[in-house]
Length: 154
Image (cartoon, rainbow, N blue to C red; front, top):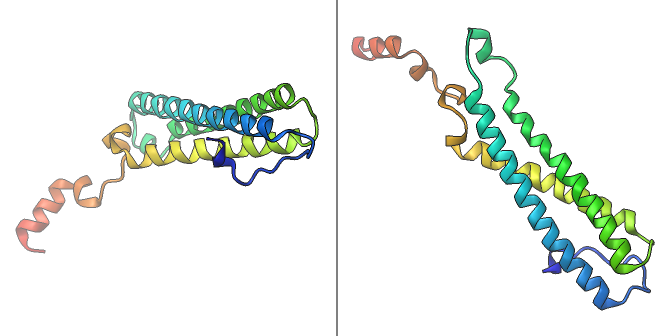
């Protein structure tokens, strides 16, 4: 499982290969679990916030769409993954050489992956966003006018 981190080399040649492989396996499992949990939380919280949002005036339609802020939850997941990586690095490898570089890579990977997956799901699964906030072409917004234009032939 640790093969998903193919670019990571041992920062310290004194680390045994078996310990490094076990660390990468743990890191891969932790990354998959962290990303999955953050993506599910982000999508669920986004859907709840989007359903609760109401339109009271015309300016509410053009106001910033705040439910998208839940994507920032990826930052918390990234920090959690980085801290867990630092902790596991120190306990399982018993060395301090290169720990910050490995933790930074995991932090960035988890943050970017969680944010991109969450965004992709939010954008491409249309049932998550209420219809009133989705883009609708003009004929659907002005049905009476468009129906009159179609009937009159121009």
